[in-house]
Length: 76
Image 1 (cartoon, rainbow, N blue to C red):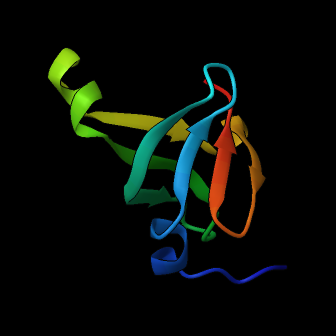
Image 2 (cartoon, one colour; image 1 turned 180 degrees about the horizontal axis):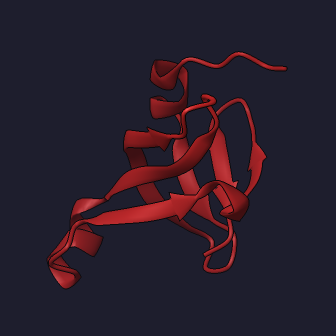
């Protein structure tokens, strides 16, 4: 079992490997009663927010492909 702080995850950029784009940063996380991550809420970069009124993207745990030192790779 690996322990990771939310603040450590929030410091990483979220990269969509399908488009090769930086989605933004984690602003919130949903966990279940057992402490497992269900999904991250990612606040999109300003350019993307201009085109998309919602501003936030939900990334399910199953969509995470790799958590690196500086980035989290996701497949959306």
